[in-house]
Each structure stands twice: as structure tokens, then as C-alpha cells.
Image (cartoon, rainbow, N blue to C red):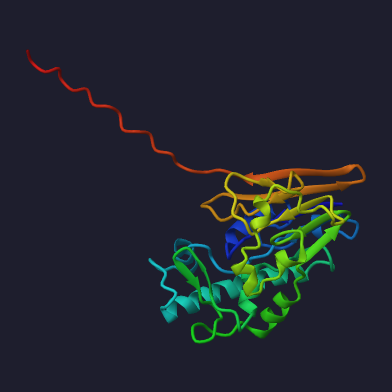
Length: 272
């Protein structure tokens, strides 16, 4: 079996479709290819959650086609909701064209927040995510709400564990304690968080990564949230075989202009 695993997308439709085209899972019209639809195919697509909420004010501006996005401007907020609803419907249509189990979307904390009417808005840096929140935005359409609510929180395949945040149930329980306790701290601890679990390897999103992939939990966990910076994107191809897992990183891992220092100006020598 082969898995194509995509980390947090955060409403970047162009980036997701670029990844799927590059992985030969979608054609130029956004339709699944034979690699996913063939009855005898061995490829599965897994999205690690957080499909909603752009992660910066600049990304919201791109999403809504405004010069500077203001989440407290009702027109801007409604445009952000409409753009994300269109994106979610496109992903839902893509998944519906496949046999059950060929594409799995895991629930992320931002997706959960869009569903939870009692949970307050999340915030990233200087921007608040007010979409579909009472007293701010509109209502999340019922069909999208039901679809997102159906996403599982984890996936286990032949000793490989995939989830949004981490290997333990509390890591992927997005209540208020999730934020108060900072449940992603496990990645910084000098211990194997998968010890005592039935998993040999874990793949998780949620924690932003520059330059591709980070390894945690004494080498047994792969952190894959590389899609938030500029044009960079990354995904994993995981081949599951009896002898273990072959993991290949794909994408554009680092893309940044680093300006040269200004050339020194030759100054004339002082006159004697």
C-alpha cells in the first residue's frame, strides 16, 4: 500500500491542487486520476486536517481579493467564508468521486473550531478567525457541517499512526484544555511519545515546519506542516511493506530571496 500524506492546507486551494497534480492524483480539471480511482489501485490519500482558516492576514487578503483583510469588516468576513466554502465543496466533490477509504481527511483543531458553536474564535498572530462564529460571521452550511463532523481524528494502518497533532487521544481532543495545556508540547520532550502504543511510526501536522520535515519522539514521529510559508509546499509518500516504511518527501521545501549585502563604496583616501 502507498499513502500520499498532505499536511495542513489552511484554505490554500491552489496549493492543494498543485500537490495532487504533482502526485498524479488529480488532473488539470481537479478530477481524480486513475491512480486513485482504479479498483485495484494501492494508493490512499490522507489529509492531516486544518483545511480552513488562512494563517495570516496576507493570506486572507489573497483569499478575499482585498488589499488588507479586516476580519471585523462584514464584507471581508463573508468573502472569506464564501471562498472557503467553495474550496471545501470542491474537496468534498473530489472525495465523493472515490471509493470509500481511498481518501481520508482527519479532523484538525481549526476544522473543529468551525463546528463548535461554544468555542470562541481562534487567533493566529494578529488575525482572528471569525468565520462561522455567532455574532461575527454566517452559519456554516449544513452539508459542509455534517461532512466535516464525519472526519475521523486518527488513522492507523499496519502500525503507522496518522493524526493532526500527536499519537495520544488527548493530543487530538480540541477542547479548551487543548489550548490551555499546549498539547503539542510532546514534540519537545526527550522521550518516545509512541512508547506504549501499538504504533511503530507516526505522521502528524499542526506544528509549523520550515524546510520540509521535522522528526520528534526519538525518531519515531514525522511532523508535516510545511504548507504555510509562501510558495513552499510538501507532502509525503509512504510505502508500507512487511519490512517497514519507505518515506519520501516531495515538494518545494525552501523558497526565499536572501538579499545580498550592499557592496562597499570605495572612499577616497584623505589628502595629506
